Length: 523
Image 1 (cartoon, helix red, strand yellow):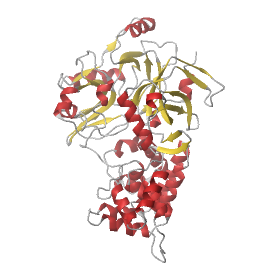
Image 2 (image 1 turned 45 degrees about the vertical axis):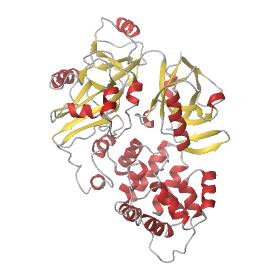
Image 3 (image 1 turned 60 degrees about the horizontal axis):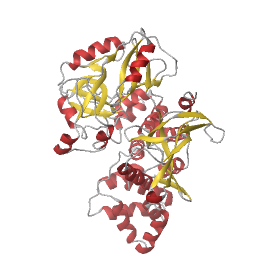
Image 4 (image 1 turned 180 degrees about the vertical axis):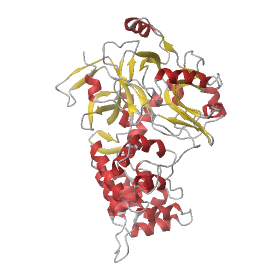
């Protein structure tokens, strides 16, 4: 537990993404037994100790300290785990063997409501303040140290000298403490065999188009729809729906899973309502009503219907077609889609144009509904995980938009004086750190403001007078009229009239835009 507590402490005070990766990689390489797997689960929010809750912590501390003093201290500190860890009375550990992370997880994982307080107290008695803090952060579900699932995958791959794409492909099909994953990483076993099991494959991503034009003999154009990028994986043992971050969102959109009666893996855009078979889609806000839910009611399915517009195919049956050129995959996708119900699935159409200038005119004249712009796909491109240069481009419509990460929040004024409504956001610099690029306080609805305010209060890491620094986990899609160089800003750029266009709860922070991307938009 001591090594894990040290890791948590270092991660808390480390802002650099690259340094976080190095810290986790070193810990995983040296972690004994199942400690590494449980640590990964804890850091990424996948460790559930159902019988032990925040109320368990409060009940335990009430038996060891003045409950009124604890409440006052908790209100001042703002964190249950930190307050309880510091207030817990020290006991002489003597020659007792140190408690390991696996031992603690197993003990609390087997707890029930009758013995949860006793078991937690026994563990806390055997730990120092740093270890207590780390354990209590696991218990309260508040392990907010700036570690996303993507960052954890990268760290694991670095620890064991594996391809992060290979790690990502098996990660989501395994459960903590990921024994098969570590056996593979340590060279004790082959890569886990997931044949017949529906599982996630890394997405192919696009770069912003920076060139003045592309050769349409080499590139095909498709509409870029404004929904949620998803992947459907169908296998002999079932069907699952995944977000671009690898989260299983099958429960939120069960009609997609139910309608996918096939073996194969397809990539597409989940869209709200609208007309299927090439027609318009509904508002992205309708999707937000269902995103993040573990299950949805029949009423919600009726009020917020969805369908899937297909972009690409990765597996045709059990055959991996990712190495085929886009033209061959497109034909395979069209054949595959014929077997799917048309009321739930269609294919994103190819936009034909005689020249790049004509394509630009088509783009500018396109209807607004759910269209962000165009995708330009190299006709001979394989389906390659990640964002590879020269293969796929995204050519968005005006206004300019960027995916940024919320960094700071401040209370508003007037009727918003009780809400954190002013948000400073940043993009990734060349060193893997976030640099502030703008501040916005408009563009969201009253309901979204309430959600953002709750996020700020629940994810605050530091306070600077009226300003709160938050965990760097929430992506905000920011729309702005233009961007220019600025010596007044540390990032070197400033946005003109930025506003929050969308809350991207479906997008990992690691996939937010870079400063280099923003600077390329300067005219």
